[in-house]
Image (cartoon, rainbow, N blue to C red):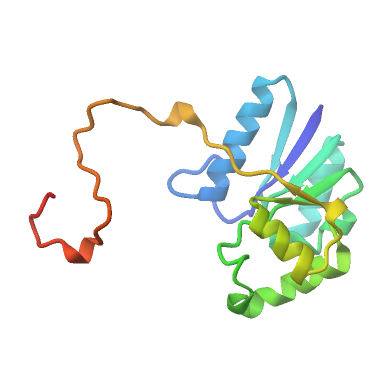
Length: 171
């Protein structure tokens, strides 16, 4: 299967430092390729370039990882879905200018990969997206990027906020 992943076009993919969505797109590409799929990453803010690169590749499926590209969504001529990584999506009172993006979602009624049931409910109840267009697909994690030990060298603080600890306190 040929799959296109559309990144935000803000930082490079793979990222050279921090970039949560960029790391996710890169890890997804690698996991899909390990499964034998051919994967294209499009990572630009230029809407015309996004469409041209997708069309030149001719994918079987397109996954857009940046909700601000909702205006490009109707021009993608392949099966597709979009994911929002907006941190306050479950807090409509904090939408501010983001409400314009949600209005576009309400208009286009795209297929949406929701990162949680809570996000799915926001799209269904508040934005009025049909349930048939909503799919809960939580983010995965590249377990190869982490190491584990039964004997950690760093203590974990539970039940106390850092502000409650005196400088130099380790309990």
